[in-house]
Image 1 (cartoon, one colour):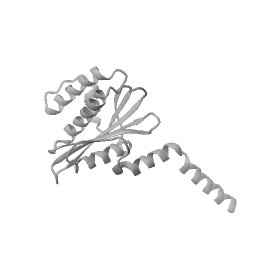
Image 2 (cartoon, rainbow, N blue to C red):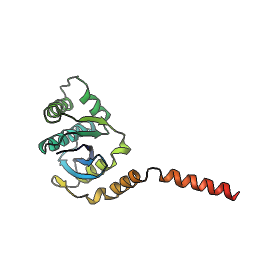
Image 3 (tube, rainbow, N blue to C red):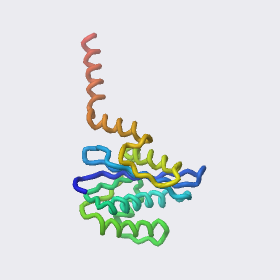
Length: 179
């Protein structure tokens, strides 16, 4: 696929239903929704393993569709740091990391994995929470209901980033004039 993309990934955990959910959301460089995917594992795993499984799932999915020029973003600093290091780890977590390092190097030539704060990853987190209640993976070509409001707010902030500052500046100016 041509162009540059941003892929946000997150994991959510439900001990109530004993599931780990993965949420993946792909947008273009302008922040426009492209597609999303949810998937679930029928067990609860550690946070580190869940986040690593999420990144692995995203790499596998977008690699299979021959995407490139992708910024993969996760709110797991540990997953990002271990991915970028050369350290080998023989744990379950380390095996997942090793697998997706190999996948990344063979499928993506102009891409990167980055850490983002949780506030920047709310769409993927909402998808991951939704995934814990689903029986099977789902691919969305249209914005799913569970993230529609988040996408609208994100687009609003993107189109009108200075709106709040302008409103407070106008209010302050009006207050000064009325004094």
